[in-house]
Image (cartoon, rainbow, N blue to C red; front, side):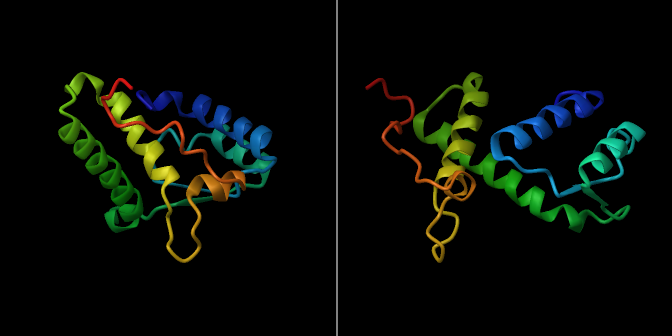
Amino acid sequence: MKHHFKFFEIYTTFRALVKTQHSDVIKCFSYDLGGEYTSNKVYELLALDGTIHQTSYTNTPTQNGITKRKHRHIIEATCSLLQSASIPSVFLGEVVLTAVGLINTILFSYISCFSHFEKLYEYAHDYSFFRVLCCTF
């Protein structure tokens, strides 16, 4: 999200995608006390679906730990891909998307043996399209 004022539009689009593609509603929405999340329009939209809204406490950065760890995981995977393939930084956006795609398709638990993709769509992911990064074949 480049601009905070676009949050409502982005959330509305995401909400529609969840309803259409997964026949479900967003059950809980957690956020900090930023102004883009606390408008009456957002509260009304959350209430329309029965979505619970949870706010973090002021001055408690520890509550943002999960998000920060996931962000760090994505950044470290991206840096690793950039460095190992000697890709120029102009391709940063594409490499970030590649890293997120890889993270979502690898197993997230050795116990359950499912990836995030398999949990969401209930079928195994097709790995045949994976190629070596920065390779033309």
